[in-house]
Image (tube, rainbow, N blue to C red; front, side):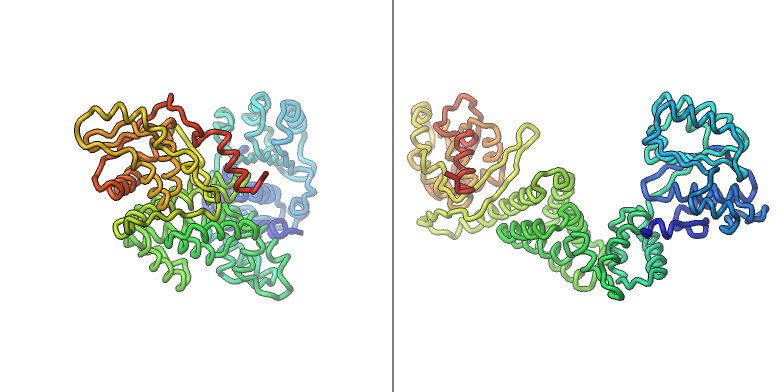
Length: 538
């Protein structure tokens, strides 16, 4: 028998947590002043049906002495034994999810009039009561308002807001809470002792965290890991992580360390390794957010490291020196938003890769900005991209995926100066400092050496105006204009322009939907060409 059934509580003393429900029901049984209808609402696995069965057992127990402090079922009388074994004809359990129509409730109304077979009370336990149709609720209403003296209703639901107010007004409602990690650990310790299982405290805590407040889930997880462990062998944290497909804590710290060093290639490799090892990337990202939160809090002077090992605490302290607090907050926000995307994505690793690119691209820009000042004017190196890099950027109106490949940029195929001539004529007659458009290809080339993506966008831009110390670029697509206009990007380009021509210019952008490009960046033809190059297709 699976553990959650084998160790299902059979009396109130066995229940872990839900103290407010246990005490109230115990008092009503002791005083003999109980209701004819109850609604147990709360998350799954919180003990609703279990407590309903214990309550029904106490109501019909013939071995329980009546009086004060007498509420526990004896567990020995014929009624208690039949209920424990699931054989009692007077405890009727109904799954409202599969018996939700008016016909099923009419049948219940017909049968409820008959007296119990052996017990004192007929107890109806209706699970997922919110699944009943409106007609079924209305059919139940009269019976629930004036039931026979021998009938008691205990209804359970995970969505109390869907239960009709007319039903709620006729029952006593108890709200069940999710179990705390400590409460679940107490349960796991008890079951492990009874099963003679050796399990590390850290491993037990991990199982408690993975159950997300559900007692039943925690026992199912314990059942799973104990079933694969060798007889007598200790269940370790590492073993739990391997069996459940979880990334180790070490992999989380390693990933953060790689991000702190702006090592995009290694970050991509780590994500790929975790994916092909069968690691749950949703869980990995959740742990990643938890560690980033601890690093951020430590940087703010709040020590929340008490649940980490000494080695992990040292890593948090070191990593806190590698990030600015604003960067940490931004990373936490981005990774939190990626969790539901990972769950629904066809490629679970893609949302993480997109965030990695965005973080490291910003680091590239900062490094380029610092190194630009010390680089010689002859440094015109062009780098080839060895690996696939993804970037997701956009605003409320656009979201674009930029792909960098082994191929050379489209800039080499289409020099921007050829597309700038008719704009040059418009600005030539104006007075003031004017940029020499013949230098523009060199600006693009210099930009490409520092940031391939920015160079690609500049290559599809057209110089609209170069008057009075200002260069205005025209873009066909709003997204490209928005990216170049961002402060960190425009500043880099302005410094490159100053480096190329010896004069400083202010960069501005505009959108011209009528702009004619030979091979626009977003064209389907070019995208297909790039994808073919990535996968080396003919």
